[in-house]
Length: 332
Image (cartoon, rainbow, N blue to C red):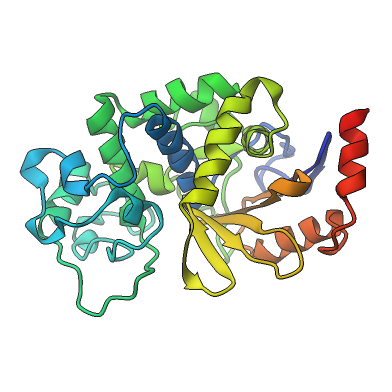
């Protein structure tokens, strides 16, 4: 495990175990983990910045943002905002996804973007579908939309808008020698080594690999703790607040991929989890108190409650007695 806690101007690190059971390679802040569905926060952050530049709008129709040959006549009213907040009605995965699985331990390796677009072109929303349906397809389509609108590969857009501006050192989609040398090998419930995943599509949804170092930088941007990135901070946190949808639960909203836990007597807690075979990860943060908890693990263990509880500790168990502390630190 690699754990990082941000408490205003202080950052704390805790490491436990090793990157590989067969070696003494220790976990560090630069150890790379697969983060599964937490990849969405990178795609969402990228989308926020590109939308802020005016290249597209959340109110745009999805059919207008995709190549003409893949427009779906059954989805003329579907908007980008519905992909963002999982209210599109699209299922978790395409109905034909299993037909392309040559290796069940590497399920995304052969389902291409053309396959996904072909599925979308014939998809029809089920009648009486719940408004909120968590779907990997949503962010896989956002990846394609960004590539089509910007006329550049998704990996290049990540470099241009996130990795280079923020100084991220360990964030990748493709497997290369550096990734392999820094990767914590994932372990399944039975102790076997999980296969490294490849993504012919769905990279923006599930396929990003990164480190504690890079996730903490991203958190500092969200928490407005990096003075030179203030313009990005305002863009990202504004989008989370303004695109909220309260369809998930009366106490949980969704805003730009993030789940927003509403506390009656405290500030909202913003969170996201990630899971893929052999790995689990979680992020929880509170913008108003400038606190965050990031946990990465290369074992199949549930981390949601741990991250929430650790963040509760630094937030005085959700009591509003931190304002003076934050003000004093800023004045110093």
